[in-house]
Image (cartoon, rainbow, N blue to C red):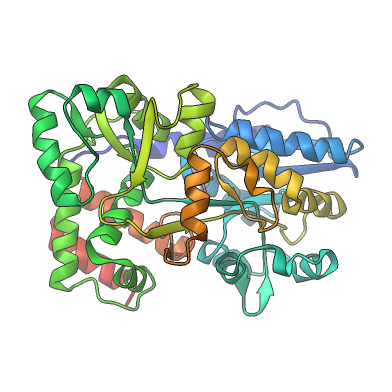
Amino acid sequence: MFRRPNHPVTLALAILLAAVSGCANSNGASDQPAKSADQVEVFSWWQGPGEKEGYDALIAYFKDQNPGVDFINASVAGGAGSNARAVLASRMSANDPPDSYQVHAGQEEMSDVKAGKVQDLTYLFDRNGWRDKFPKAVINAITIGGKIYSVPVTIHRSNLLWYNVKAMRAAGIAKPPATWPEFMTIAAKLKAKKITPLAIGPEWTQKHLLENVLLGELGPAKYSALWTGKASWLGADVRAAVKVFSNVLAASDVKTFDGDWQSALDKVIDGKAAYTVMGDWADAYLSRAKGMTFGTDYDAVPSPGTDGVFNFLSDAFMLPAGAPHRAAAEKWLEACASVPGQEALSLQKRSLTARVDSDKMKYKDYLASALAAWQNPATVVVGSATHGVLVDTVRSGEIDTALSKFVGGGAIDQFLKSMDGIYA
Ligand code: GAL
């Protein structure tokens, strides 16, 4: 269908910078203190506007609690860890692990667990009484073979459609689409007014869109079965849903997009594009980085066809085997698990805290609606494929290759065959 930009260059540059700096600081700076007993080096991808603010707040809490420990922020920018993952993999294979690193709770943890590259953290959970402090869905995601391997810090929702309230009113669109067919009808009206119906970003955002179109078109059970290899990708229903995805993509700016997820939101803010499908970290960008008001300037609804479904993901931190500063890394993980640490992060980053016992009165505006959806017993919770709950890193890479061929002009049947082969 469409061409994609030259993403691997960014990636190669990030790896090079990490190698040159001796650690993966996003700007390649080499001003870190020499390794000493009282430091902790933490690897993350939270560097961009809309995620850095929350991460900085968590780091500030850690520093406040541990004044004697130097915090080395080894972050590699790029939404969803799109650049960070390769840098981390190269450090891990060179036996140069950080003291802790960010991961998505779930299958994304699997390869490192299988390869024995991370510590079993069950003892930390038992020592601190954390087992009943996290929701069941999250505990299930971080438990592999009966052992717990990460400390979850957030609960995010992936299936949201964001829009600019005033721009849509001015364009005469009374309400956002509740289904993808409705979106296509609205898209025709928007195009006539020279408004791009959907803003998109790089490859991972395209996969993010794909998962939510499949969720909307096929429903939660089929969605989960597909991404976990329990259903065939060759059915007529799946083909029809992928066809909807390609129509939706054709109504987007995939041919011309530039930048990451924030740039897609910028187009919605400017009124150049009507909608974007993005996780609720978008709320941090719009409200915190851009100073807009939820409900008045912008709003979000479940992405088309997914009302009543919460497509969740959770950011977590792990402890690599051979972490150079294990005691400090444990302190970091304790800060990550704490209620004040989680609140510092989440209230800025606009996620629900992973802890069940945080103060829910602090959740305002968008977060109040996220909490209501998460706690509603009628809500169906599914796990994100793009953000690691359902798919491991090996399959994820294979899916990226298949999807980028499809988005780059490949045939639908070839894509479905490739997807089916990945799960064979
Ligand atoms: C997700 C991550 C979120 C947010 C987003 C954009 O994968 O879980 O916390 O950072 O990527 O980078």
